[in-house]
Every structure is written in structure tokens, then in C-alpha cells.
Length: 368
Image (cartoon, rainbow, N blue to C red; front, top):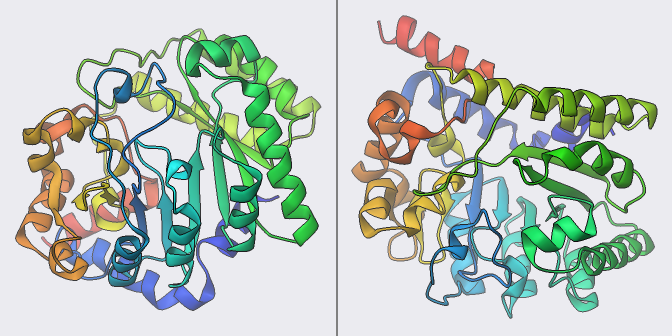
């Protein structure tokens, strides 16, 4: 399916047009003092996970077991007015005992809903609930299609996850649902050599598409981010295989992976990030933070959380937190003082070129 068509159909819905106009206005005129609510909101409903993946901060620390209730999720979604909600975080969403009620609480307010999962808790009951309640996207993090490598990275059986996904797809098809299920792969030196074989095997697996990205060091002490020149040849071979299979979705995913390689390798200085303006992150405790990429970093110390937090949206109305001086301060630091602010100073994320143009215009024309 054409990527642009998917974005327009699922994300930029006609009924939300005026909302997007207001966010464009924010980029040009308000910047850190964002007048409109966020477009996308990621919410972490569960603090714990059933896996201890080597790249996750939970493999390095113990975290208190906490849950966000369906009523709390509903409050946040309603008050935020976000048009796209993602249920995911450091914890595994589908371990929540009331996950179907949480899905209902989100969909009640009409946003597009995406859930990221490791796939192991996808029981038949949960799969039916996901389809019946109208979830739009499911991303299943598998990182590899090789059974032995999967067990090395994640400590479970990939075959069980694939069986769960097959059940989900079969039930979706039987109900005529528009749910899309994707495979998510995070690559580093442990699994990048397997990329061409992943392309071959993904063609036979029950996913609708795939998403590839490089692992990043999202917490202090992590040294798993490795970007090497020889990886380009691996990507080239994988792309050739995807072309032979005529899989446009995999070709697109590989193109994004290649483009992000050059971003990491070159270490561009003039990086731009609007994440805290349109896509913040809510922890299981209700702390509104700059973005999902800070999710592991803020767990490492109270000081890290204080630096990134805009306020607590369970203790105060979302709009009050969003427009607070704390929120304005965080957004200003990310937009204007990134080289010295929190984990942002080491983050390689760079915004789409159109938003970089908007920032340039706002700085050099409107604010001259």
C-alpha cells in the first residue's frame, strides 16, 4: 500500500484539518508556547514487562509495578484532544489486566490508536478485543526473523509470537477489520548481519508491513548504538532482495533505515526537534515529558525526570499542564538550547525537512 495514501487516510483525516492548521500556526508563530494541543500522544499504561531485552533499561534496573487505570487514560485523552494516541512505553501494554477497557477508553474520544507490543501476551481473547474495539495499528517488535537470534535478544520463542500474530490476522480478516499489523525491527551489531535474511523471511510472515530503525542509546551507560560503514553494503543487499520480491513496503523501510544511517554517521549539528510541541510522552505516573525517546532516560534518576517533565496530567488538567511555564521551558530548551539540555544534547533525532524550513522562517522572518 502506498505510504502517502496510508498517512492521509489514517493520520491526516479530513475532519481534523482545522486542528492541523492550528499546529502549523504553532510552528510559525508560537513555537515553545504551543497554543494548540499535541497531535500525537504516547501513553504508558504499564510500568513492567515480561521480557528483559538487552537494549532496554529494565535489564539494568528494578522498577516499581504500576498501572494506569482506564479512567485515567480516558481523562488524559479527552483533555489532550490528541488526534493520534499510541499505547506503549518501557512497559508492555498488553500485560495490563484491563487492556481492552483502556482501548475502549481511548477509542471513545475518536483518535487513531496504535499499540506497540512484543507480541508474547497476544492471547486469542486480547486479539479479538483489539479487532472488535477498532484499534488501527499494531506494531510487533521482533528485531529478527531468526529463531535462535530472537531467543538470544529477547529470551523467548519467536514461533510463539508468530502464531499469535497469525491468529490476530486471521480474526481481523474474518471480521473485515482495517487493522494493520507491522513488524518492528531495531538493528545494531547483534542483528544487522541478518537483515537480508529478514527481508526474505518477512515476505512469508503474516505482517502487513515492516519498520526498521537503528538502536539508540536511550539511557546513560548504554553503548549499544553502533553505526558502521559496512552496514551500507548489508542494506544494499537487503534492498536488492526486497526489489526481487516486489515488496514496496520493505523497500521503503530499508530506505528509511539507510537515510537514518547517514544522520547518525554524519552527526549533523543543526538538528531540529518538534516532538515536545506535537508528540509528547506520558509516563504511567502521569508525568508529561518531552518525547518517547526520553522514556528510559527519565527512569534513571529523579533529576532526569525533573529536567524533562512538563508537569503531571493526572494531578492537574492536561490543558493547564500543557500551557504551564514548566512545559514552555521544556519546549524552549529542546527547540533553542538542545546542545546543552538533558538527553537531547546526545540525541541524533532530526525532524523532517519541512519542519526545519518552518523553524528557519519563524526565526529569520517572523521573529527578525
